[in-house]
Image (tube, rainbow, N blue to C red; front, side):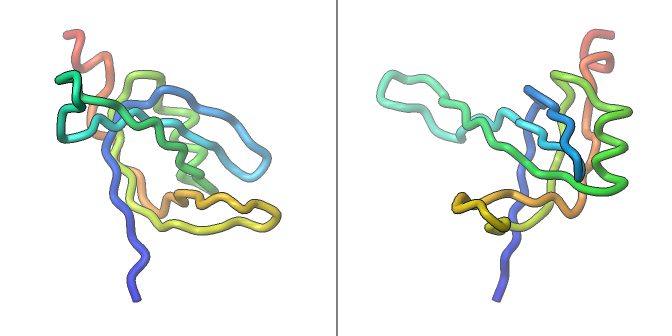
Length: 98
């Protein structure tokens, strides 16, 4: 069995939570819709422990990150969640602006 997901996108929101953080990233689709536009998916990633601490300290809106993790249903929650196991800091807005 394999439960693995890899996402790359720009940070839209960082929400601080008791046990970690929830980061929403914008991930553009690789194909155009019927109007000829690339749609964007907005995906929430749950991050725990030291990874959450680093995200809150070093990342800001607009930074590009890569997330490797798994899909999981959490207790008392019927939705499928993306749980980060590893985060890679790919670029920051500061790097892009220079």
